[in-house]
Image (cartoon, rainbow, N blue to C red):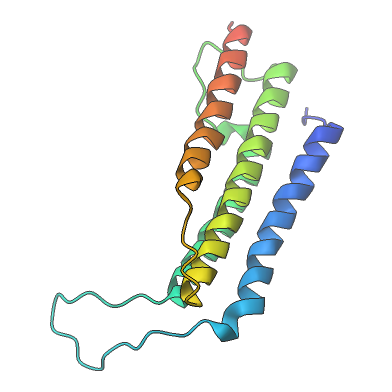
Length: 159
């Protein structure tokens, strides 16, 4: 039995899809304004390659899209999730809870990646509006807190 989507689940899904699209829109609208760093023709062995903002944006877009796809797959194919053996994985309540947890994490991850891409674009354009110190605080709270809350809810469904 597949988990049913509530109105909140649909809103979270729309927000996460919009965030993935926003990453590509931000990059596409500012791509021509971001300079590419010059890579020297001859590099001594072991020298680091200078990374430009464009290289970082490619990597961030790939990570964002890949994480979105993997978290979506984990929501539907819940055998990919590692939960304690004493929890009844086949219970409809547990399946719904795991599905909701994946949606919350997917939404938080995509929104945080939009901010990260925005910051890299601004840095690449020379605006020096780097990552805010609050970003680390939000990131530290936005991912583990839902995991802790949902884990405590899952413990109610022990066999």
